Amino acid sequence: MIPVTKAYLPNKAKYQAYIDRIFTSGWLTNNGSLLKELESRLAEYLGVKHLICVANGSLALQLSYKALHLKGEVITTPFSFAATPGTLAWEGLKPIFADINPDTFNLDPENIEALISNRTSAIVPVHVFGNPCEVERIQEIANKHKLKIVYDAAHCFGSEYKGESVLKYGDISTISFHATKLFHTVEGGAVITNDDRLAEKVRLLINFGIKSPSDISSIGTNAKMNEIEAAMGLCVLDEIGLVREQRAKIWDVYQKGLSGRVSFQKWNALSQNNHAYAPVLFDNEVELLNFEARLKERNIVPRRYFYPSLDRLDYLKSEQVCENSRDIASRILCLPIYPGLDQKSLQEILR
Image 1 (cartoon, rainbow, N blue to C red):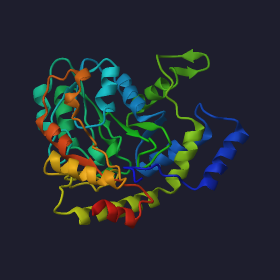
Image 2 (image 1 turned 180 degrees about the vertical axis):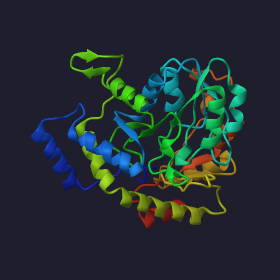
Image 3 (image 1 turned 135 degrees about the vertical axis):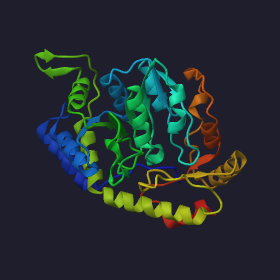
Image 4 (image 1 turned 30 degrees about the vertical axis):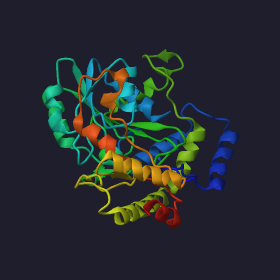
C-alpha cells in the first residue's frame, strides 16, 4: 500500500544511543536533558524566541487559550483539521467561522470584521498546509478590536514569511510534531511566543501550575513531552535536511506531472512551500471521486484533506455558511508525500 503519508524513521543506531542515555540517567520525563536540548535546537533552527514542547498539538492550542484567558467567541476558519474548532469548543469557547480565500485556502481577512461582536476575544487563523496567512492584515484587525491572535501553525515546520519564521506572528503560534508531520517526535507539539510573560505562564500550565516543590502558583495540567519522544525529535532534526529535500522533489514531480489536469494552492508570494502536504484541486467533486477510486484500485490511499468543511459539523452548531470552504473541501485531495516514496510509485500515482 502507498499511504498518504508515512512517519519518517531516523537512523536506528543514533536513536538507540539516545535511549541508552535515558536508561543510564533513569530520567524519563519532567524537563529532562534531552527535552531541554530539543527545545534549544528547535528554537535555533526555526528562528524563534520561546519554544515550549508539549505532549501534542491539540494541547498546544488549549494551553494557548488558557494562557491568554480567552472567553466567549473566537473567529476561526472552517477549512482545517477538526482539532482547530474542536479545541475551542473543548475549552468552552464558541468557534465563529469566517470563510476562506478560495485560492490560498486560508482564512480571508476581509471576512473577519463583520463577525466581530462584544463577545469576541480572539482570532485563530490556520496557515493551511504551511502556507502563511495575510499576517499583517489580520494583525491590523486584531489591534483595532483589541483581540488576541493564536495561529494554528500545525503544518508550518520551516515555513518562512519575508525571510523569517512565520511562527513569530500572533500572540502565540502552535505547531504539531505528530508522527505524520514533516518533523515529528512521534506525538508532540509546541507553543511558540515572543512574550516572556506568556512563555513563563505556559511552562507553569504544562506542569500543573507547579513553580517549585513547595509553590503551586496557578491552575495547570500535565502537557509535558517526555524524554523518549525528545530523543526521536533530536534524531529527526539531525536528518531534517534530507527529509525536506526528498519532499520537495516529490512535490516537483506532482506539479510537472499534473499540470493542466488539476489546480494547485496559491502560495504566499513572500514565502516558499515547505512541502508538508501535496494538495491538488479538481474542477468538481465527481472528478475527484473518480481519480480517488482509480488510485484505491491500485492500493494507493490519498486523503480528502480537509473534508468536510467544518461549518457543516452538527456538534459545532455553526450559524455561518462558508461557501468557499465548502466548495474547496468538496474538490481537494492530498496525495502521498513522504521520504522514501520512489519514482515508480510516483508514476503509478500520476498515470
